[in-house]
Image (cartoon, rainbow, N blue to C red; front, side):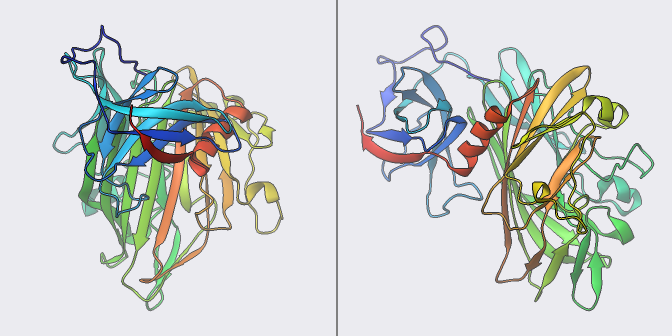
Length: 417
């Protein structure tokens, strides 16, 4: 989705662009970074409609003014967001915000929703609108419980948007292998609270369900498409015991789809115990059901210690002390869908609760979980990054994307040109 601004692509006013009264210095850390999301607090009084930044290399990349994301400083009114394709270790570059005027709308994200259908995030360009994400926000229906008992996100292929890479909802538990695993999903299968009350939002047993209640934030532009929703977690009695604010952001990047997933889960109860097992708790990715039919021969995992064998998986076991499944910084799965190979990288942020216990399956479902005591004074806050691309990846490529998430570059305002 890379876009370069040229004189052939835009109509400008008397000058090429209106420059900001400030510039941005961006300095990398100890390692090389790839797909570097830069979020710069806009100085007060300088909130012009900047839509590109000119890098010191001479390249121009899209920029977008946004409000604070769920994991940002809420005291900052406005951020300027842009993505630097690559940043070498210790390198310092400058970014000059500018405002340009186009003949036609440049490539950008849009939210599309039709009555009764899930919300779709598409990337609109001259070639058409390519689906990127789908938010399965269908309201819970007691008469269609299995199909509607939890919201989640589906991911489309990053090249054409015609192939759904994730497993979507199902009408019954017999619709394929383990259809309770869906898309990008978060939940726990062993939850306890109150007077011996229990809940399993992963499987939806005993009429337990989570549900999209309302949209809190929705922003779409040239750099990102982001939405934040309020989701209620409801017990066997149909009453909410926790409230979740879930936010998902997709960025315009070259060669694949970059996704930030974050959430804040809160409760008004004295305590809600969140527990489970590696297969049915935490934050997971579940591949298209097709992978369950060709998985062992075509699916493999890529980890910080290297590429695994086809069909080989690692799973945390309380009876076996396997450190390779505990607190894994990142993990990737390589799968075949629609005759093409794709790789999905999942990055865990070190600020998330520990210890994390990992799970991998040859049908393309992977993630990890942890135990947590949720109270009114101690909400649960999580953040992860997902990268999806066509083809295979190397350990070095995964590490460069993970490092850009975990140790983003330092930024500071400098005098404008």
